Image (cartoon, rainbow, N blue to C red):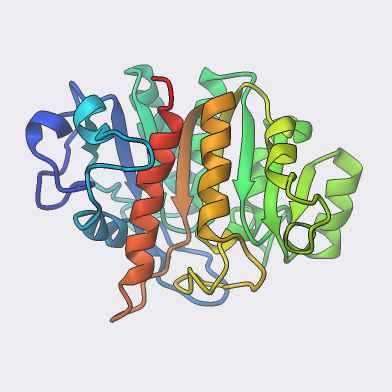
Length: 298
């Protein structure tokens, strides 16, 4: 399995800390873009995150550690989909993630459109059968199909619910959905914390605790970058107003890392805008913060 060197890998770290045989963490790049429905560019997301990560400090003052040197982070060469899509592309991603999990790596998958997330979630579910999934997102992504395609980014969580019990899916930040999705949430008992509820104080200051309580002991996080408010994350295909802000997001990640075991995560739907680099940096720093949260106590 080929890894990227210092000039291209996550954080720009030397081989002694980025070798796949010794690193505890593996970064998978899945630059897949096939079904975006508004703004495009998610296929460039993984490389933009890796490039921006070279300007993220190794030392995290909040977590008081240099995780990349303590644990090692290997960045795998981006997956080549050979121009093929849908089930083929997902199978390629799932195979790579499964192989890394078999080597006891903590796997981070960078997309690409949200379609890719069902593959690493399935691979993690095989290893952790009691898995809960936290979906940070502006959209429910629960349509059975969208524009005739069941592998659409708008259907990714419907595909996940083909193997994950719906009560183990927790959604936070949702603020755009169709009637079909709304009815499915109510019918199947999906635990959804809507953006308007969070922003209008329905849960007071305790919404993060409510999210935490809804999760089981082992958690996979699928993080669609449009879950963040467009005031801090404009570089995404459908930037919905009313999203999560930085500090509350990191607080939530820290709470989950402290009280649950984060077993893996993905970050998807960054659509880089030429000449606007700060959202790419935010996404790269978010990956670093989520890693630090996942390794609390480890």
